[in-house]
Length: 40
Image (cartoon, rainbow, N blue to C red; front, side, top):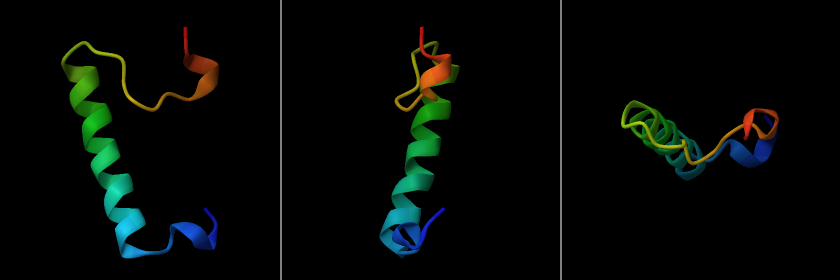
């Protein structure tokens, strides 16, 4: 990661996105941020 992600707000939002992605996956939904090579 580069220096742009070093703020508390950015790291906090990144953590929340991880939680959202896990929640989506467990609910059988498509996660909000997929690595492009795994998109179908």
